[in-house]
Image (cartoon, rainbow, N blue to C red):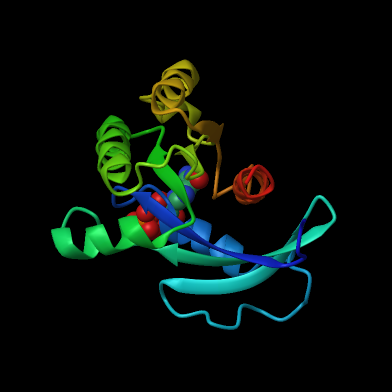
Amino acid sequence: VAEPGSSYRVVLLGASGVGKTAFASIFAGAADSMDSDDCELCGDEMCEKMIEVDGEAATLTLLDTWDAETDSEWAQECYMQTGDAYLLLYSITDRASFLRASELRITLRRFRPAQHTPIILVGNKCDLVRRREVSVSEGRACAVVFDCKFIETSAAMQHNVWEAFHGIVRQLRLRRDSR
Ligand code: GDP
């Protein structure tokens, strides 16, 4: 049975420059949060806060990852093992970041073989329509192959960012309730 305020660790993954920091700041600065306090454990790369999704509280600890290009394999593996759920970001204006998301998904599968680990593939920067390099249908098709959900967002416009966090909580609850 649902215990209110279940606590989950959500990891932001993705190439450098796709908008992970922008996502983390929206999360940290949330007007959406249940208490009006700003994030308590808000360091550079970790933030814990309680949000309400479908009338039920959830505590999310958001981990913003290393610069995936430059950091050690070891650090990367640590992150791969630490999350209850993952937001896998790419930028719709950067095809290389889309390919990077595929690589990260494959690495993640090695560390998280359970098909129940919630992952959402996030195509960010959808406000930059004229610089688009990855179509919506490519993103969606990729998510089907990866067996995960898909959403396009704009951190700059604060569009769909909370929907992504809420989507992760809903998937975590589905998994919890099906145990
Ligand atoms: P990170 O390296 O993944 O943490 O990426 P950042 O969050 O630092 O974002 C990289 C750059 O992209 C910054 O200049 C952001 O302002 C910009 N950016 C992030 N998200 C968006 C978005 O949705 N739309 C636009 N136009 N720019 C964005």
